[in-house]
Image (tube, rainbow, N blue to C red; front, side, top):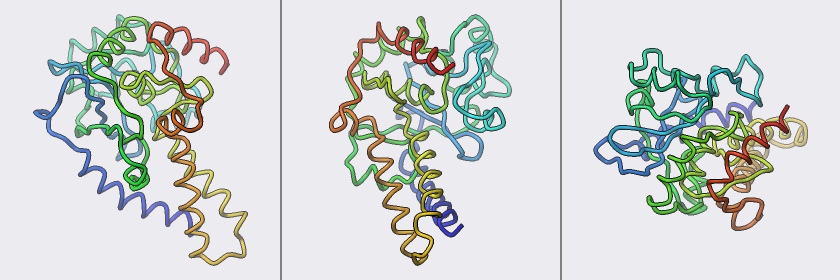
Length: 267
């Protein structure tokens, strides 16, 4: 129980720092930026690629689809609903665009994407120290971003072809945005930092409760934090690409096929 509260308060402290450090103004937006906005009182973030002219391409649950990988009761907390982009009152243009889509990649205006939330910029090419200083996943990565000239064609291609079925930990909105920015794709498990962060935290709390029963509270906290940081680091797409080698550069033309194949394996 102590470990749980330790992580909780640590997350709150770091979350305040992250919100301030990654928050940007609309005037600072550049074409090809990977942006995100927090949902459900900062429980999770929704990600997308800014393509200019106040428009964003992002991945949600397609019409007629259901998110996989989580219990239904958690669905509303960890996923973005479609076709409304998790927006209670989408504008007419975005509503009509959503109704014509048969997959989960949408183009919407920035206001509908933000859904009343604040605007944040995802960071690429951060150091290991910077990465570990961010207690919450889904805000930065060790991986470097490709040039805008490569990012936009990927996003526009997937807008037409789709990105498979939405899966909370293996194929979500962050996976989509990170792929567009880097061209990196993993078939074994997703690259989402916030999903990895959540899984690392829950597994660390569970294992610490049983493996260190006779340890001091300080010892449990120290080991728990260390374990959590290591799990987050080895799950990062940049670390996996450079060290673990289970992530590769994949041409965008292959992505619809690969994501659909991965989706079929889930069922």
